[in-house]
Image 1: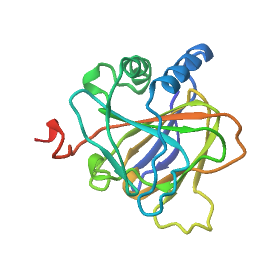
Image 2: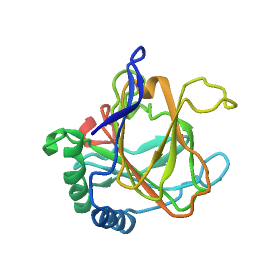
Image 3: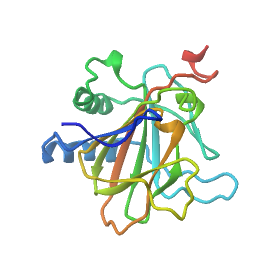
Length: 216
């Protein structure tokens, strides 16, 4: 059953959580598929040359050629491979999305090899997703090592603790819904975790880039 660890009615911001619905063998199967199938790379920040503290890949639905730009980094697209379709056929019905016509059209993948890898405070409010303008649903699926996921209101001082904290385990589904990207930030902090964690975040591109066939 879905629960909502964050429910901010006044700002229309919500975060949903569904604990594992799949057997361990299925989760291990998907973890291996994603680990072996993604084109993992570790981008550098253009200004400093510093490597991002995680590996990543960016995938899009058929015909979409939109790049993902964030924090000065630009990641080119890979079309959804067959294993991604297999994974989505299993996961999307758990979110009430039956039929490919209702599915998200892109996915950002992150690989955290150990607890020293992380992602800092940010919002997925880029123009692609129109997160500052309106509803911007995101579906997150975790595989592997359990890690902490945190949420806070934008403008919160770094010295203050996160408003919402959830331990995400392998097989957990989490959503960010409504205007969460407009009003909130989220992160995966460094911690004493030993094993690798893979996270897939599916989104809907609403404003295709000019270079994309779907934006012409």
